[in-house]
Amino acid sequence: MSWIAEKINKIRTDKGLTQEDLAEKSKLSLRTIQRIENGINTPRPKTLVMLCEALEIDSSELIPNKNVRSWAETLADGFFLIALNAILMGIFGFLTLDSKANPNTIFAAFLLSFFLHIYIVFKTPGMSGLERTIKFGFGYVAYFIIITTMHGFILGFGKGLFPCLLLSLTILYFGNRFANDQDNSNN
Image (tube, rainbow, N blue to C red):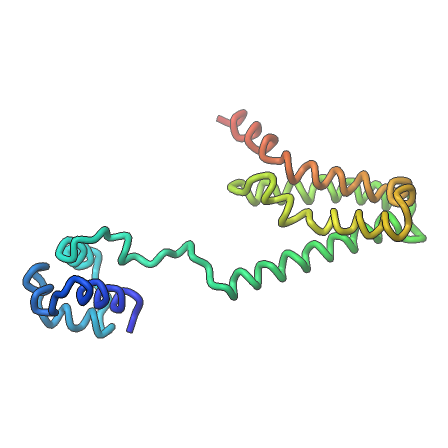
C-alpha cells in the first residue's frame, strides 16, 4: 500500500466514513476510492483535490514531503563530510607541514584554501555561513587542535598551515557576503 493510500484510508476511518460515504461526498466512483486505498491507482491531482475537499483536509497532508530525508541519506552525508574534511586536512598538512614543503607548496596551499572555498561558497548559496563552516570546516578546527597539541602553535603558524586554515574558515563563514555582492553587481 502506498503512502497516500494509507493516509487516505486512515483519515477516512478516523472521520468515521465508509468508502461509499467518501465516494458520494467526493463525487468519485466507489471503484476509484477502492483502487486508491488498495494502492492499485495513484490519484491524479484533480482527484486528490476532490478527496481533500471531501475529507475536509489541506492537500499538503496528502502530498509526501520530499524534503524529509531518510536516516540513511543523513548518515551518508555525514560520512561524506567527515571523509571530505579528512582529505582536506591531509592535503593542507602535506602542502605545508611535510618535510619537503617549500615556498611553492605553501603558496599552492594558500591558493587552494582560497579558490576551493570560494567554489564551495558559490555551490552552496542557500547555506548560512555558520552551517557551511560547520559542515566544511570542522576538520580544520580539529586539525588546528591536533597540531597545536602535538607540535605547538609555532610549527603550524611558521609552516603556513594555520594561516591557510584561517583563510579557509573565513571564506566559508563570510563567503555569503562576497557571493551576494557579486549577485547584486550583476543585476
